[in-house]
Amino acid sequence: MKTITYLLLSIPLAPAAIAQNVAVFPDDYVAVTEGPFNSPNLPLASGTSRVQCLYNGLDMPVPVGDMITKLGFREDRTLTNMEAGVAMQLEIRMGWSTLDEVSMTTNFDNNYDGTPVTVFGPALFTLPDLRDPNAPLPDGQFFIPLTTSFAYVPNGKNLIVEYRIFGTATGGGSFNYRLDRADYYSPRTYGQAGCMHSGGVAPNLTLAATRPGLTWSCSATSGPPNAPAFVAIDIGAAMAATPYPLTAVFPGISATCMGQMPVGNSVLLGGSASSSGSKSWSFLIPNNNIWAGINISAQALFLDFFSPGQVVVSNAGTVLTGTRPRTTILRGQGVPTVVTTGQKSSYYCPVAFFEHQ
Image (cartoon, rainbow, N blue to C red):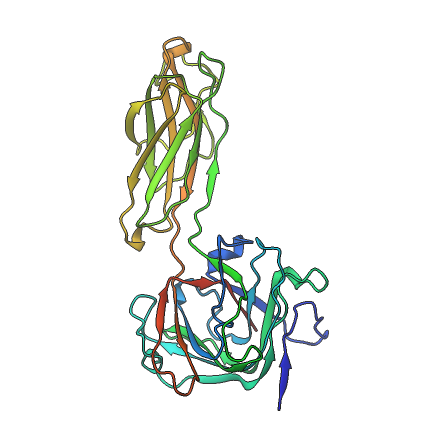
């Protein structure tokens, strides 16, 4: 029986070897060291099973024409307990689909457009231990080296990776093997501090991460108590690169009160601060991906009749709307040659790595 164990990134390449590159899915997770969730069983710990992962090419950073040589995942590092690797009889197939994360069906074979390619096994493969303090994984990652490289030439189609597990050392049952799992990525940035009101404190504005289908929200704290409060919002633009004085708009305002919003396109929402000087604003973002990847900036303003110019402002902030990972996993329990249908988990995405050259 052919035995293949996991390959770690720490193995040095020979000087004449072709350079290897590693792409991460979803692609914006190149900037995220740890996702907010974990995946207890998918895709490798469901026991005897058939598991398909569909990856939308919109989020796949592998260059067209490159050869995928290894598939990888990373452990969930918010946990500390070790989870032992398990030996399994594994086969991996890769192919293409005209379907996406929404239209993917529950029938394994019907999801393929054309015939998939067997890129690994069937062969014995042993998963590494996760979070083992005596044998830590480099960057928390491990890779499965493919015995047949796969050409990434999508021609407008989406990638399917299918893990076919014919048996495990656990007797074919599922086991805990918690991998890092992605969700939407919505980074926030903030400008310089606001100016102090008559109580000697500067209002502070914070933004919540968001995506289409959720609410956009911001919260101002430490404003003047019970004061009229407003927030300027610009949908589609980041805050100004350089703060500017507000004296032309509010004569007599303190020189420390700086405008940080783009000029000309802001919408103003009103309200009143609480007795502690707090105020929040929100609105629903339509559940359509045309609203993904959009900057929304905001800055709060309070009327304070005992401050210069009778107005104070907070810092500004910008949030970039994220999008759910454009992937879906289909899982069916049982011998892969027998299983034909499974259960879909839409937008479910263990962070995946694709080594390519």
